[in-house]
Image (tube, rainbow, N blue to C red; front, side):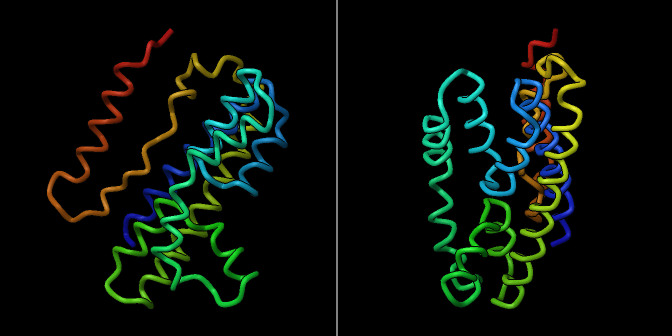
Length: 186
């Protein structure tokens, strides 16, 4: 669990990027905020906003997001025993099923620790992402062209070095460095 703070930080940065790109692209601030509270799936949200900003309709945006985020169904099966009892509770609990929360939960040795890791990482990441989206949405209109700052490419990889293997922290850092070097800065 010691690495969940890094993932929350990355989630907050990703949220800032999402909020800023959405609003600077012309969407009203309430759209990324509402989307983040209801959808809460970063990659699906980025793709849906990209589709909307490209001029397609909301159905195309929703279909794109759903196709991209279908993998969470498998994640939900992997952590089904961690979700609360009853249909309503389980439905609400699945809102926190993300790549990161499942990774943190499954890395724990026993069910009580898995449950704790799921909830701590899930609630923390949800709060960080949505706080970041709010900050980004408020700043988005003031920034103008977000591509100038690289915010359109700033969706950080949520690859915390939660592995204890040597070099686990260098691979994500190398990926971020390569991405930044390939960015056509203006």
